[in-house]
Structure formats: C-alpha cells, structure tokens
Image (cartoon, rainbow, N blue to C red; front, side):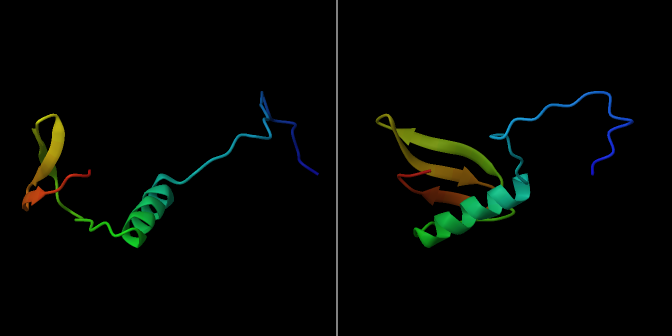
Length: 70
C-alpha cells in the first residue's frame, strides 16, 4: 500500500510517461547508424552551408562536411 499521509497534491494520467534524455539521444544515434549515418561526437557545428535553397554541407570545429541531408 502507498503511504499518502504527507502528499500535498498529485496527478495521474495513464498516457503520461517519462524518458531519459541520454537514453533517447543514444537511441536516435543507434537508429541513425543502422540507416547509414556517420556521426561525429565531441565536435561542435559552427554553420550550415545552403545553396539554391538546399543544405549542401555542415561546418564543424573538425572541418567541413559535404552532405545533402542533416
């Protein structure tokens, strides 16, 4: 049994949930790798190159990367 003597208020919604941001990020990274993405960790993005209205590359602290998808 749950002791609720010191509970001041609460809410319950059966469709609510929680997620760990680190776990969600790791899951996205794993799925991206499975689909052929190459990820650069520990590198900051400094800019996005756009030409003719489309992404053409990403500028990073480790150099520029030519890509059509970000």
